Image 1 (tube, rainbow, N blue to C red):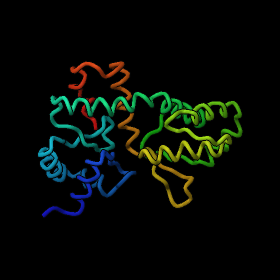
Image 2: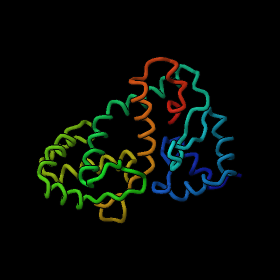
Image 3: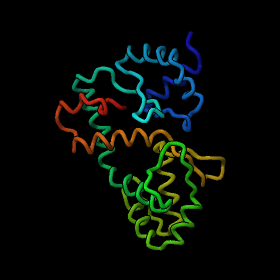
Length: 211
């Protein structure tokens, strides 16, 4: 008889969720046990799936086990194409955060982002308002709000809905970055390396398997 944790874990993986310590520490700790990984993998193998970790080893994802089928390759290409289409927006966001934090380190799982702190720093550096405005015009973050506070809220809310941020507390203005950023960096590395997803040989890449 399967355990509730097993069922929740498999359901989350098949919903294409990225499981990490931030997004769901209970499921993440469950998957840290090799025995549990084996149980999950045996189940997933029956439906052509497997458990995989991001290259930073800080998150678990579901991947295809056999990617030789045309439908499987199309599904993987579609997901990577979605990332590629929004790549500029994500890069702009990361650059904005690095400028606000005055460092050259990208957002990593576990990082805390405060809506209020971001607004204060932009207010102190008006030159960054144009960068925020440009970011808020991107399709994935699009908002009609013209004020910085509204634009920041729209961007952070979009990232939360996509699973990149998890709210801290009930204020709705504090967030922690999830392991989906690690998954995104893996996808970005693949896209930058291959400059497109066209040839069938690309689908055989280890990075292409990330789901």
